[in-house]
Image (cartoon, rainbow, N blue to C red; front, top):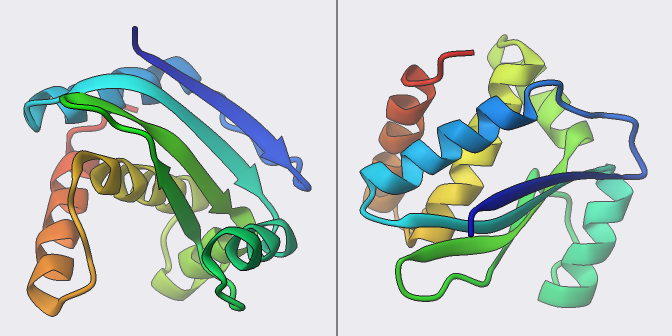
Length: 140
């Protein structure tokens, strides 16, 4: 069963194209040889995500996304906690529309659930290339 659910914590941010995002993520997973399982996308404030970061990862800093991976086998599942404050700041810094940056962060988290990492320089370059590729396939 594939399902993407959208939630908000300490922010009024929401997306209006949930079904298109779900279809897009289904396609991303298929192209990677995986199946979309259940993904929860939680849009939140910097402060909310900072608390998640402290509580679950013992990190005391702001970040744009924290991904909790529940994938099993070929099924891609997990929680994507996304700070709209950080994403907004990134969009301003990169001079891109906020929804483009939101989509980049969503696919970034999905790629983590698929198994990609971004800790080493070559892995980060590969992940950025994958993000760019999948962003180019959006039809919305």
